[in-house]
Image (cartoon, rainbow, N blue to C red; front, side):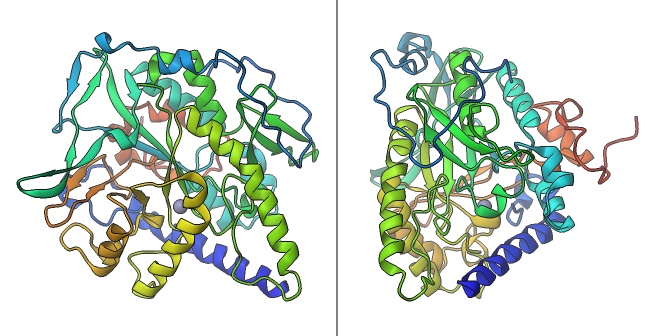
Length: 437
Ligand SMILES: [Zn+2]
């Protein structure tokens, strides 16, 4: 047990260390599409009260009442209103978020985390306030959420089987936007640093986040402190923000389970506890099912972020490791969320070091397992259809501390929001490179 904890800790430390090292690479907002390959990685209050007593253990799967309120979102646009063709050469913007910081003051100042951990949160996350402002701003600027799965298709014609960028039919004046959420796993370390702890289905049949107030220890359900229910509420309030009911896509690992449920098979289960472990795991699996079901019913989709958050570019992560990891993801995560063609590279690290110019053994293997769309992180929402194999490579922009602090990013992100407007003053004073005013 002790060993397991130490191993975990080391693993998390490694991840954090890698994240920190990426900071040097990341903030390049003026890069052209040619120099992208190594880039790494409200609103108006909800209609429902933000707190509610929860029985922390088993979320109830209330059957969705007749007249699902989500229908109004799904059916908001009628087909004859979708008259604007968004062709293959027009960019589909893509923003991604890590879990958002529910209690920024706690995360940045009051938690017991080390300084480097707290600075890591500052680099890679946004606060609830920032997230709310960003959603409002992209909505105000005319973006409309589209499903990532609708952007590309695999076709077979006389030239063989390959991916194509689809023409999207949009309402006039709208611009397509994909949003993805990485690591929606509710890792234990985050729970100690001011984040929510799991997604549940509430008595109203909707998705809520379970949260523990880090100052009082009070456990409650909320729709206002977690990226998922916040977006749900936002779309209910602004149904024109969603094309055919689209919301966002979760990029899930598996090593700490999914969505706050410990559905994983740990690599080290202490001898003698296997039965108990498996019984508990099965309970978690049953508990997460209604959450997945409601998410899927309401426009959310799922992709892989690998099981172990592995670095696909690293030579230490050899092909055998990628194979084992992928099978674990398919067995433990894919079996619950369903099949996906989308892989989000952990750390933004490209398989074999370069997925653009070559198709290496890791990429080939991942393709064999059904992945077609490979998403990294970069300075713009570029995408590239590979010619030698049926696959798409695409980058996502990353609203977070690194880009918010960067003067070079202000321009690139201005199509989405005003950095000065969004930046949360609760962040620690780590400086910025904004132009002097
Ligand atoms: Zn990640």
